[in-house]
Length: 340
Image 1 (tube, rainbow, N blue to C red):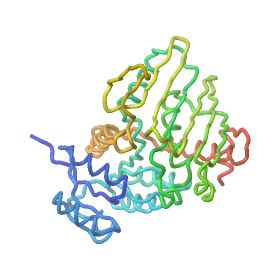
Image 2: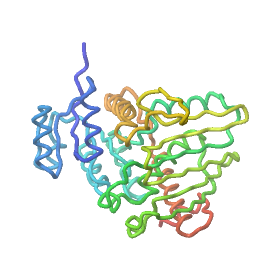
Image 3: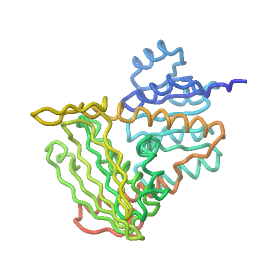
Image 4: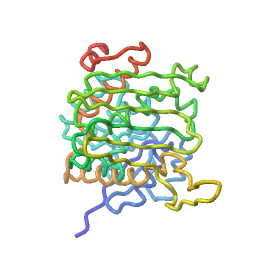
């Protein structure tokens, strides 16, 4: 007998909400049961297109009987508030990162989720990208031998709006945290020492006391090193690459192109551009992530991103921001104490 689709309440119809909406349309195991956004006109359009229910408030949306689970895709600074609403209703919650701006908010959320036996799924979607997942598996299977070095590159296109950047939490928590999550997954250790440098070539971003160009270095207990370089403006497209190097070889996850066709003439080599931005680059990752969340809601699997994972990612982002602003090496074991 076919399983009843999981009823999803989608809170937020901004750029994150839109790609979750796209993924929901492709799933048989889940359906959009209710939608809520402060922009009521957007909700009306989505409800008309999908046949889902409308709600006048987030509380009303979450409380509806046909809602089995919640997706929080609201502006960054409101994630924690809506996550608490979902957990208080004892319903599973998938939230975009960051879960909260502060470590105590992360801890409170996971402690409440455990107490209420409600899965809490923080969306680090790169783990579900087929290319990146294959790279992680390859390293863990020993294909490169003794891992020695990891490099991650993340360059945005287009430049996010200043309105978004103003509430994003800054480049370390908004952007680099994804690279940190992947690097730690690949290495399988927590770094001991961190350093980073940041600059602002876009004056409007500098005016927000943020960076648009950052390079970070990490040292792990086993001697493995890693670098991450990120930038808010990549004119040639959305640049996302990872490389892992060891004593027996190297594995790389390169950018996606519309086709694999390359043209060579007397003028040189030409190939199609890379993906324009994240909704197309990570389309498959968002779908696989949502499939995993539905399995967690059904109790068929456990949440793959743990409390400790989210905690470490947050601490590393904080530590690297400190390293950039204070221009010094930061030890991992000092970070949490500095946040008190």
